[in-house]
Length: 252
Image (cartoon, rainbow, N blue to C red; front, side):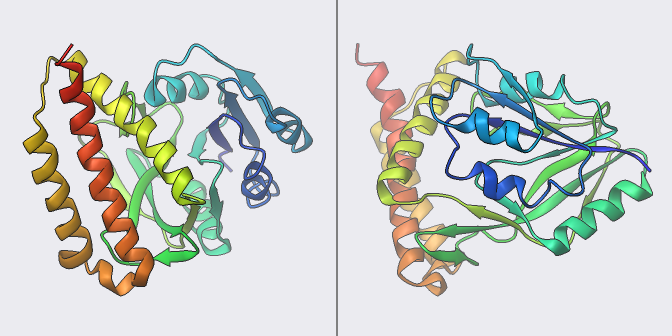
């Protein structure tokens, strides 16, 4: 039977880490955690689950951090999780079946369902949010992106869908959302600026309006209730902010 590791990159995840690891501790062969400078009890919690804990505080972006973490993986397969995610029993079964089959030239994407402000978002273009998270350790890996990193793999690769949801408990509050989105906006602007890209405020406005219309109307976000409306508004705001961030840099 091929072996499987869970790999994670974390920072100050004491509120979520144990709940995540509880869903994988009994059936994976190894847990790899790469920390970027926690000041809370993250390391203590990780150690209590027998995780192999490493640190890299020289932050170069999410993609680079995942690349470093993958270097510590010794199992045949790697399953990537974030601390605010949970593997459901159905997804666990699907993962185990995929690993047992051990198909060549294949990566697997997981259907992810996010809970935002106390409600699962089943519309708004958020579900099923398929993410490639399972593959042979020596076959694929993450790109160099500062944010919104993606798994890269050979062009002839089969991408198979697994069954069962990966639960994602994101954005605990509006404040939490704004803090995270500000970080993403900065990383997005850093990435675009490094490529010589520029932005205008009109781009920010037009993309923000387009984001709201797409999420709330075209993707039926209105079916997600008040949370769907709030998410569409906040997503439009975040879209505007990232363009404004890049525009503002050009003014100096």
